[in-house]
Length: 145
Image 1 (cartoon, one colour):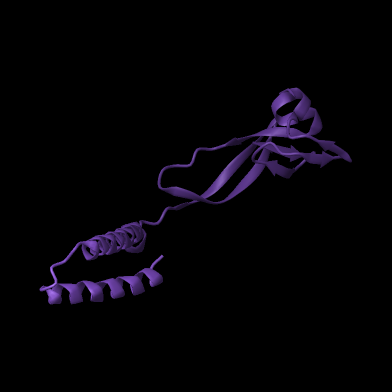
Image 2 (cartoon, rainbow, N blue to C red):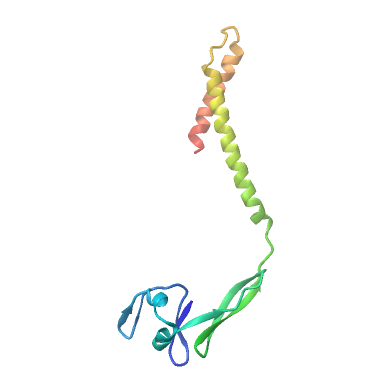
C-alpha cells in the first residue's frame, strides 16, 4: 500500500496499484511496481506500514500518520462478536433444504420408473396410488425449481 502525501498530510491512499493524476500528469498503475522507492518519494508517494490485526479483533477505522519516509496506519479495533445461532444454523438449514429438494427429485424419478413398469391389472389400488402420486409430483415439480 502507498499514500500520496503533501508536506503535512496524507492526500490519498492506494490499497492496490491504480492509475492517478498528479499535477495534471496521468500516471499508470505500473509506477507502483516499476519506480524505485526514491522516485516514488520524489512524487510524494510513501509506502504504508500497517500494524497486524490481533485474532478476535476487527478494524473499526484507521488513522494515517506521516513518519519520515513512510506512513503508519494505526487501527481503532473492536472485538469480533461471538457467532450467533443464526450464523451457525444458516448453512445447516441451507444444506437440509438442498437435500430435501434432491430427495424429492429422486422420489419423483423413482415413482415415474415404477409407473412405467408393467403392473398386474388386478392390483388396481397400486395403479390408483401411483397415478395420484404422479399428479402430486407433477404439481410439486412446477412449484420447486
